Image (cartoon, rainbow, N blue to C red; front, top):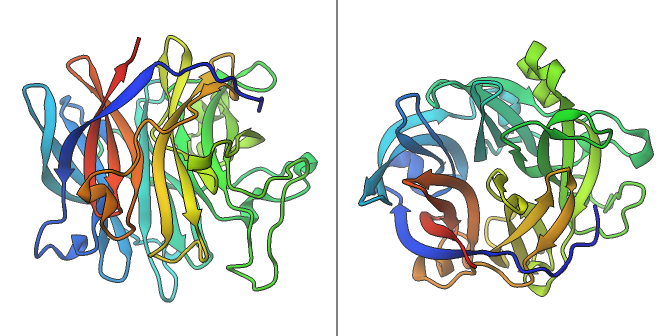
Length: 357
């Protein structure tokens, strides 16, 4: 982690419209469709993998082919459910869910790697699954963060979200090449054990949840894909810096390589959070961006001081959780990049990502 500069980030987001809304009468979607992952099937067709929320806040991961008109995504055709909370560790006595998928096509592995939040007996825990076709997914299981003595804690104690993978191997802290993932631990254990409160790793003094990076050696993953669930070399990348992200930040879509480095679209949260797991909160989610150093992706080269996009439209301002813009996927169509994002935890929107000279 390093202090980022105020160098402008030469990218902008321009709204295109809503691409997916809950289907009336569809039980899996009565509480919203939101926060999609994305990818292309082997035939090249673009799909979203939306979070579908049924009654009781039970989430599944769907598959929906994107309809494109004149090079612009305009809607979807549903293709069913590809992941449901079927595993015991994805369900509690009073809750269940596979939530907020993010997918990265990793060419070196010939697979889509999906991270998702398993909402099980101990709350939200990150997990991984892999697929060659977006339809059939193999669970690799929960992420098991390797114990790191210098942190003076066990990262597996904490709820964790916003896991995204880099699409190719990157240099690690020792200069070797690794598959790397960003993630967002949450240090307050009071929700789980009243009075326990915040436990910070050694060297961290800001209790607000921020973006971390962890690594897995390439050769280990090539030998056994399940090694992806056992990351190590955990490092802090970024914490909240600006008013629009004063409560917390988290990674959005998987980072994409641009000429400045790795472009990471992230979300920032402001407002008040009394219960981090309550469905209705007085919060404001906006989208910003960072450039990470290609020679050391734990280092932030620059970041936006103001959001690239904040809640403005009716769909973004009114929904299950009002005032939310939550970017989760980037795809290229005919040479143009588009960012898909959750709108107020109820709909899915799309914005064009352009380079702003």
